[in-house]
Length: 231
Image (cartoon, rainbow, N blue to C red; front, side, top):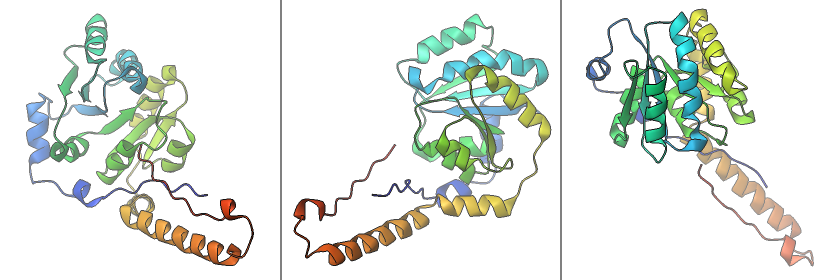
């Protein structure tokens, strides 16, 4: 048995039409010097966008030019909008709603940081999409995320909801420089190309195992079963 994380077609996140990020930021009413924080997910309770909103007032005290763009829709959207209103954040948090898949890469490219506080992610594909777009990430810790962001130039993590604001402030102030070699290596690791090679190697090993054990009198343990799961 082997777990092979889903690969992502990275090409569509690398290139966007010229001027599209400037046009999108203008559409979102962002000033030239504003920093854009992006959340992109289904708006359900378990995605924990509420933790990001609760931490945002503390972020604004240290980084007043930060704006928070929330992309997505779902059953918890109204509650999140009410939370934003209670915290007097209507002017700095924008709920965009659902967008087409063709627009996703433009939002990633336009953002300064992609943030995610969900504790239900086993393999968050949005993290990989943000990486492919060249956007640094600040995400709630889990084993997969810790492995994904093992270099500060890619992103950082926080353990508890109440740590989010402090970690993001510290990370933004550190202004970690880009490292294209590290990013390229990480992107190949999570690419659909590498995924295909890993799956092929698994099939080859499974075939060898079958041939080596085909004479055993335990047919129930001598079967190859392959299942694909997409999170």
